[in-house]
Length: 362
Image (cartoon, rainbow, N blue to C red; front, side, top):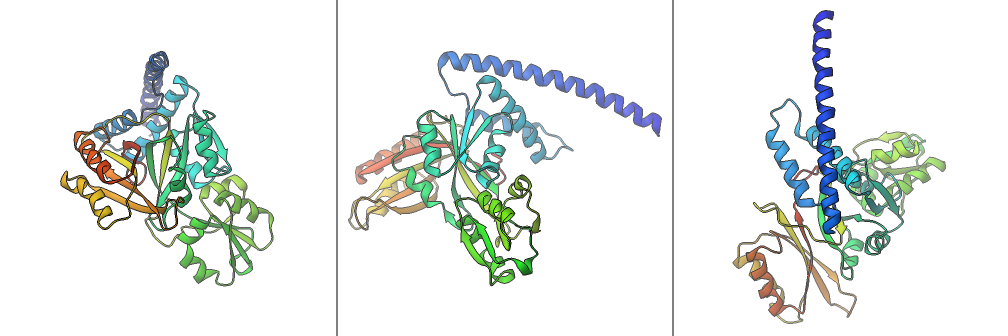
């Protein structure tokens, strides 16, 4: 057995040497790509190229390596490549160890520079002013719906959604106390809402306290007697608070969608893998919404989401956020939007980008 193990390990060592050489060869080519991009002043992060790489390596995978493991490996390879092309700064809703931080790490890997921001508005501002190359913001959750503050900020910003990531959200209850001694539970309002039934059943007498982020809630639970917090596992590890109960979200497949903010829109992936986000206002007249949506139906463009928000311009005046399958620059989408502009006082393109699946895969 020892002889056979030794022979196998010798082969593994030889493969490792080849893998390291090939990785460095790949990164040298990425450096050259970065130099060409810099000369042309073009985008460093190219979402459509990233999506194509993930699909191509997934198709080449014959196992036993699992698809999720392969994507995680390539995420870090591409993160290292991005860092060589240009030191990237990614702004996100902080502090460290929030769900948004975890989504940013999953999207950009461990080789770029992350900057936590105290509010969603600060994330938008950091990218607009060039203090960060990209920003990561929550857009919606499968249990509790849209993140309204994010939607409202899209009204005025010149930024585009250049990519998205969908990730399953698992909530953990953290505390230095046993369940029987917990008097207060801190967390972000969305996280508390996603665990509402579990909290009512197991902590019916505890006060639920909304704070600015899940990570801030865990920080408070670390310091206060009788306190607990709902948050991601990353937060408990970061702030040293033990887990009292895990997977306490009410819905098993609790998924959140995050948008990646940037200045330049993404190109066309094609093959039905693109998504377009639009902001539309309507006239106050019968049939206005129907006239705005009909052009998509005529061209068989799938409307995957519609969300209304107060415009804040006049009482009872609303704007609509739309997600549509397809890219803004595809002929069918261009024809539909041309028709919509005839009926709507405002049609704003928020971005087109590769559509993500739950778990972050394209």
